[in-house]
Image 1 (tube, helix red, strand yellow):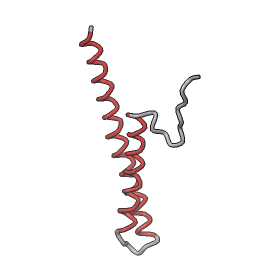
Image 2: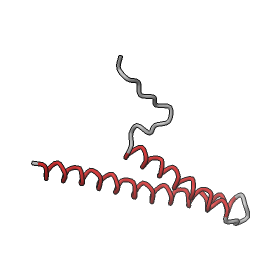
Image 3: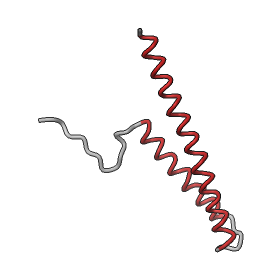
Length: 83
């Protein structure tokens, strides 16, 4: 019985990790694309917009992963004890 519980917990952690990795790749690639377009159109092909927007995408994916693994880490959430 306990092996089933451990197996489902391992599967859940594996699924969450897979979601985090996929989310990171998609958001970083989106940031990279926006950075390339911004660099080409507005900033005469400089590299800092590419790095900036890729970092924004990676940071947003990191915060989403933090919320997936720790749902109580939502900013402004205060847990009150029952009276």
